[in-house]
Every structure is written in C-alpha cells, then in structure tokens.
Image 1: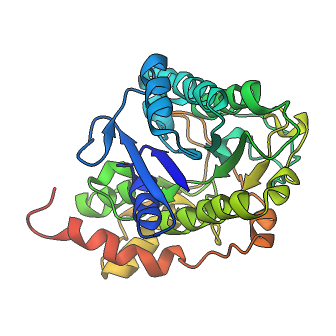
Image 2: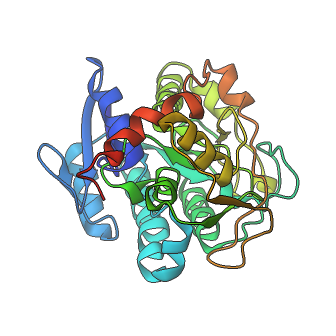
Length: 320
C-alpha cells in the first residue's frame, strides 16, 4: 500500500512517519515544506498545480493530510497564511485525490465545537468559537465537496483530534509543552483553570490513524458505517472523534509538569475566569472516542506519566 503524509516534519507527522515507515507492507512518502529534508518531498500545499503533479507522479493509494496551522492565536495573527494552509491546501489535496482515485484522511479539531454540551458525539452539532475552528471546519467542507456525496468507502474521512503533545523540536511546537515556560521563568503568573482540555500524546493519535488506514484497506464497510449527516457539519463524510483519556486545565498541566520535574510552582496562580485575551476557547470539548474504540483503538499514554522525558531537555543549563 502506498501512503503519502503531509506535514511529515510536524509534531504529529514525525510520530506517524516513524510508525508507517516501520511497516514492510507500506511504501511511505512524506511531504513537508519549511523543514523538508531527504527523503521527504518539499511541497507547497497551497499550489494546486504542484499538489496535482505530486499525486499524479507518486500515485498513492491513500493520503493523510496532517499539515495545518494548529495554534489559534497564530491563526488570528496571520489569517491569510492560516487560510492558505488550513483551507486552500485541503481543497487542493482533496481535488487531486479525487481526480486520481486516492483515499484521503483529514485531521481536524475538537475546536469545531463550542464546548457547552460535552461529550460530543459524531452527530453532535458544530459551532466553532474561534477562527482556527472555523478554518478547520471549512477544510472538512472542502473534503465534503469532493467526497461527501459518494456513497462508498472510497473518497475520504475526517478524524477530529484534541490538543497534542509529544517530543518537540522547539518548545512552541506544542501548546501543551509551551506551558513549561511559566516554570522556567519562575515569575508570578496566572494560568487558565477554566477551560478543560483532553491532551493526547502524538503516538496515540498516530496509532488511531494507523487503525483507520488498516480498516480502510481490509474492511472499508466499517469506514462507510461512520458516515454522518449534516448535524456533524462536515457534509456527510465518515467521521471519527478522538479525545485524550483525562480532562485537565492548563493550570493543571503546569502543576503536573512541576511535580514531574520536582519544581516549586507556588508562584503560579489558577485563573478560573474565561480568558479575555487571544482567540476564544471553548470550555469543554470532550469527544466520544467510542467509534474508534470499536475498531481496536485504546489510549496508552496518559499525560502525567509521559510529560517528564519530554520536558527534561528544556530544563538543562544550555536551554532557553
């Protein structure tokens, strides 16, 4: 099976690349842009002609589209770039995949929900509060424009995922790991204790996507069974939801980080009011991962137990 991955050098992309490349039954091709290096292919996903040329020459059976701008505040600061990557690139890839008969998996976000009525199920209504959520939902609808009317497993599916953490190349690469800056600074500060998140290690997300790949290849009817109507907001594509195993606020994450590293965090104050700065966040976007669990998925990596080895490289004298 020939699989192509966009965003191969990103936080999720690195984990997923390693998992797929380790399999002898998969011929893997990775696409990247700013951090592209051999054997990855450098690709401008906003260039429709370039994307079609790559799909035509590589002829993948399946594309996993993981490239995105995932930081809501960065989306607000550079909306033109975010639109190009989160919507236009998705439209280009979906059109090329449809033209050449390639199945496409699109990674979306729990921020398509407004956080007022968890847990969210595949048929729950969507109502994104920030521009990031709106753009990712627009990407889903570009997928639906190409694949949503096809009553068959061939075409595409959407998997909505929560905030991610894992080994990072730079601390800002994950909004979870970036919280460690508060501990490094050691100055009095307030950290959000209002909004509950369900962070998930990238290795668990990669495992879930691998299950979807294998299910599509072996039992496509199980993918087709996950097709939902317009309540889900994505135009009727097969839809899978994935949340982390525990709910925790950003303040809670900082406290777990401090405990794992044996640091004093008494200078960090819990802020129990909704933030008035930056992109608005929903209060609680917990999603029901039951459909993935019926396919054999189970989370293995719980946040408190996995955070220490990720943080330690940033708490040596040479860092920051």
